[in-house]
Length: 333
Image (cartoon, rainbow, N blue to C red; front, side, top):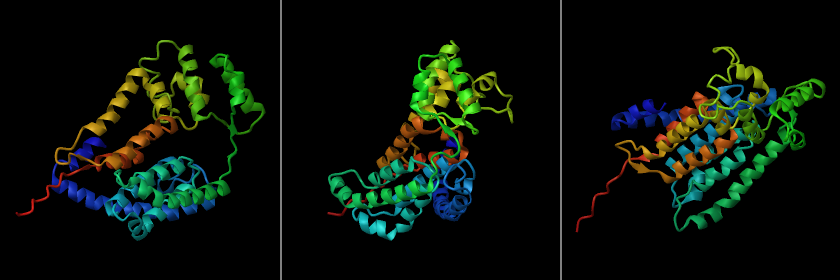
């Protein structure tokens, strides 16, 4: 995605043509999610199946993309000296956030706060603006919480493993833990178990201890393969139970690529803040802070970087955070 975007940024003509077309398509994208999400929600209830136009399993991707797109479009239309009037005039962009509260993505409650906090310029009047804006944010979070609590079925038919289970196996080796999980799945629950994200991070040292020598390069990029396109790896066969469900980005990167790959990935992400398009060297601080916060969240939340739809929105978002330096003509004496 990065080389393609940099091609459009190489000349002003390409850039302006691309952005003009993109803005229209992104606005249409937001509206398309409304009927798609409502249909999926009434058919399947809140959950992974509510992925909007992206489909089943894209609920997390959709929530991030909706917030990025709405934030990007609103920052282009808003008068930061008159925030409340601008929000009133562009109320549709705020209304179009509501599908994110119908797909069981808890991260939406954090994103909506970041969304409004970074919407305003950070200057001397920032606290005053936040004082006026805070009631709106509280109302939106409360409405979202109501929709979430009244529509989401927490059980989802899966065995949610609690802390007591893992405390019991804390001093055990990885084989004993696997046997304990297999017992629970076979005798106490008809559905598959779901290992929490932070538990996966805690289990990483146990896996690497059982397989010394893999810390540097990891276990390979095919450990998530189920044999559809690439032959299933021996690691996948042994640790299928540990690779199920959502994985934090730092977890999946380190497991696949080890220390070397993790350093490479972080270097790439940092470079996005440092490599300026030649004709657009001015940094949009609010947009880049939004991007940075998203990176930090994803390290512990989910490995959405493996999804092309997400990367298209995310990387376009960071490239659009570089602006042209506007030279104002000096006034005549």
